[in-house]
Amino acid sequence: MISSTFFFLFSQLGVGMLFTLLFISPRAIGNSFFKFASLTAAILMAVVLGFDFLFPSPVRNGQIPVIALAVSALLTAAYNRVVDAGKFRAAFWVLIAATAAGLISITSDSLAFTRLLTIGGWENWILLVNHLAATLLLGSVMLTMVFGHWYLVIPGLSIEHLALLTKVHMAAIGIRIVTIVASLVFLQIERTIPLSAIVSELMVRQALFFWPRLIFGVVLPVVLAGMIWSTIRLRHTQAATGLLYLAVVAVLFGEFFSKFLLFALNMPI
Image 1 (spheres, rainbow, N blue to C red):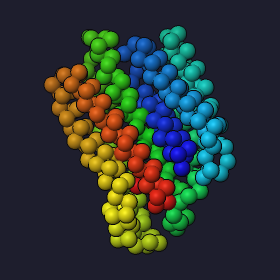
Image 2: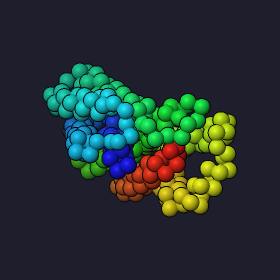
Image 3: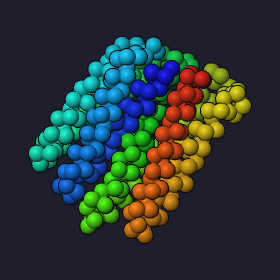
Image 4: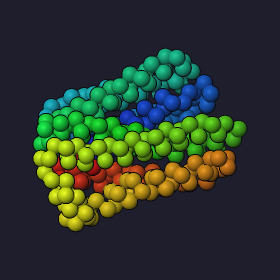
């Protein structure tokens, strides 16, 4: 369980950072941020690959997710060098390739996961949708928080870039909430197990995981996103960055408890 949780959480974090990088341009910001962000993502993926080599997942069929993530990590390292050379057009296409390989890893890992409740044959696809939403959420909050520090490096940087990334993060929160609700709705439609039984299991027997998942993964990100957006409208980047620190912690805890619920209930929430 620990090996799969680690692979899920930090591969999604690294790939999500790459995906969020696509929303901003080094031509407007400079290449220093993109070098730092891509290096961070590459290190995250390398650590995940090393951990998986030492402690391979017992609930995955095949090695395609690991191979695809390794390709993504190599392409990310290549992107770091290309963007450092100032070849932004070529760097953009390398970033797309690295992101695509990372998303293939997450997709194949979701489809290869073996411990899932049978829901009309759709259980792995439901897990995939949840994992893609988690990837965007984790990557957007981490990259936006790191970008907030760049206003100390480049004081004259336009706040519109931080506002754009914050909008991406807010959209990611909305998408993640929709996927959670959709999982429960699909369960009710399929009627494999009564929804009331699942809700009772979540709120009582799995309360140690469910309530922190709800508070850290849904409630706090929504509240903090509103506060972050308010500080950005006031053009207070330091306050926004401080709030983004809290958002990163909240989202990480929320998704961490989500993975534990996945193993407890054999269903993504």
